Amino acid sequence: MDILLCGSFDDDERDAWRAALQEAFPDARWHLSATPEIAARIDAAVVANPLPGSLQGLTNLRLIQSLWAGVDRLLADPSLPADVPVTRMVDPAMNAAMAETALWATLSLHRDFFAYARQQHTGTWRPLAQRRADEIQVTLLGMGQMGRACAGRLLALGYRVEGWNLHGGSIEGMPLHSGMAALWALLGRSDIVINLLPLTVQTTDLLNQRFFDALRPGTGLVNLARGAHVVEADLLRALDNGQVGQAVLDVFRSEPLPADHPFWHHPKVMLLPHVAAATDLRSAARIVAQNLQALRDDRPLAHRVQRTRGY
Ligand code: NAP
Ligand code: GLV
Image (cartoon, rainbow, N blue to C red):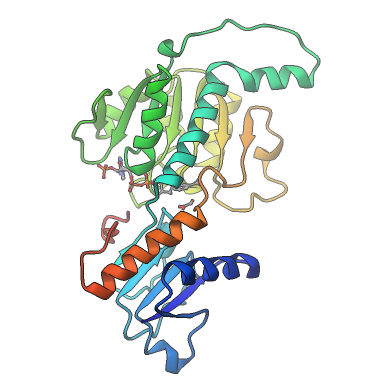
């Protein structure tokens, strides 16, 4: 089997991935680039946001396996071979990392730790009223792999958790809603909103002025999904007029965040450099190997992306 590994890695990252993947799936020829002769032999591509056009001309390609959970950038490549299955990274280690980030953000918002950090900055000693976890309503937008992992941890700490998804259904221990009417109502009773949606045509720019106007003043916003979910000018306005009391932002429309972006120095923004849940190289390599083995054995592939719906 011939496999192409390509993506937006630096050299060290690429070498580490190659070593881990080769160890997890040794009985294959791994390639870092494809000359025309090799291109015709490639069976599978293991990719991390490759440059558009990278998978063109792979005439024998039967699988595109993403090392990223979110496949928005991959699917945005108009030259992506249309009839080749795309599978994405689903890894309990990554879900756990996301849940840790959501838990930290929720605790920090609930217990006013960001406000105390601002107080320290100005030498202010001013205890704020302490609230109980069961008084705090946390809304999770997106109840897939990440949303469910976060919900489990938040429920265990006693928060009131509600979720929003596309297809409805039910999840034990918490209400689940879908549809826009339900979203506006949900936003109006939330203390903290955590975004874990995939970036699709429907979810791009969802967090806009109308969304922020539907919140109660002072709501905490946590965006751990994609920057293009947020209309940044509208968020800045919502922070300045108090609709959003504090934002925790891990993802941005342009990454790295440009040096002159107003988020950098906004007193009510806590920034992370897209680290809410990094792909875990060790476990991910084993997960990729399982799908490559399924391809080799002609068994069903795990975690296939529905390309028409975008996630
Ligand atoms: P997932 O398992 O595919 O779950 C997606 C969830 O979003 C599902 O519950 C889905 O609803 C819901 N959804 C999709 N479109 C919707 C819409 N139009 N309206 C309402 N709900 C909608 O994805 P995941 O693995 O949890 O990952 C979610 C996202 O997290 C990724 O796409 C990626 O952008 C982001 N992410 C970020 C980081 C980071 O480090 N910041 C790391 C990993 C992932 P149904 O359940 O009804 O289908
Ligand atoms: C990270 O953002 C991912 O989608 O894996």
